[in-house]
View (cartoon, helix red, strand yellow):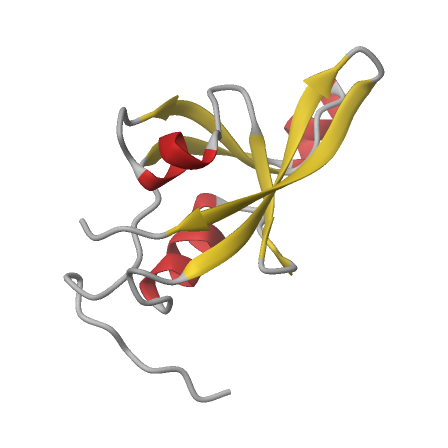
Length: 108
């Protein structure tokens, strides 16, 4: 796969602080594998799209996100200004449900 290597200034920025939900943690606590959002920066692309603390990012544009490294790799190769579909698992009355959000990535 040929991917254009982008400079830090060109790469997409989401505006979250997150941590990996490992498979062991997922099994132990019954939450989906992905990137748990610990914080959302005010005014960031994630904030503007409606992502919130406690959501778990599981996909971007249909591509699975299992770790913070997966997420960063996707962002590093996606140009700022690009609109992506971020799929998150969020807590509802019936457990976790997936929701899609359109996010226009910013610059760092």
